[in-house]
Image (cartoon, rainbow, N blue to C red):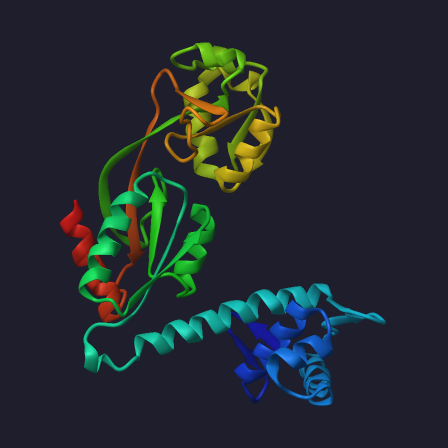
Amino acid sequence: MVITGYTVMEGERMELRVLRYFLAVAREGTISGAACALHVTQPTLSRQMMELEEELGKTLFLRGKRSISLTEEGLFLRDRAREILALVEKTESEFADPAEGVCGDVYIGGGETFAMRIIARAACALQKAHPRVTFHLFSGNADTVAERIAGGLDDFGVFIEPADLSKYDVIRLPVKETWGILMRKDSPLASKDVITPDDLAGLPILVSGQTFVENEIAGWLGEKAERFHVAATYNLLFNASRMVEEGMGYALCLEGIVSTSSGSPFCFRPLKPSLEAGVCVAWKKYQRFSKASALFIEYLKKEI
């Protein structure tokens, strides 16, 4: 049997119920715990899992005396099962009975940006008019969000430019994000108003792992790029800020994502020459939206 995308195929399609059983076992770490959570008997659940392994032709579990863990194949199936079930639930919500007005779910994925305030205002206005609309937010970098949109898991993506938007319809938000350095308030560079490439030479820097960010910063550094020391890369800034707080180095990031208020240990200084980024909301071209998602676009346009 071969797992391809969201379908498990070999004559018959794997039952969603079995995937839910599998995820319960992976989550609980024991057959007994999963059986209790699922309200099924242990022998029934154990048999289902063995049949699943036979069906796939793979060993999914490492069975210990007191607990169960997942093999590499099991970890792969766990991730795919989560995606499959999330997509099924999303599809079911889009076919919900609209008799009582607009209802359903809107899925938005995006990176960390202060521009989420605009999206939040549109979402709040829509939900106030149609309380049965539910929003689901996923935080991730551009590559991950693009994968989720392609797989149908997210309706919209919030992208920080530059980004490859050739596959999408786009609404550009009326904001410009400012790149700079997040540092501890007691850092030597905290006394400066702006940060230049020379200021960063040889210092440990934490940078986003996204390719477009690397390219942008390389352009900003110019010939000083060879003296730029990357101490760590990050996906989302919150965890990177903990590294900064502990003294690992300086985080290259967008302004306003981490608090720099009087009670915060951090301060932010913009780059010089200045480096700014646009923000946009994007979705697949020719996308067929649910009523809730289509309304979200209308409400978003009102906010800009």
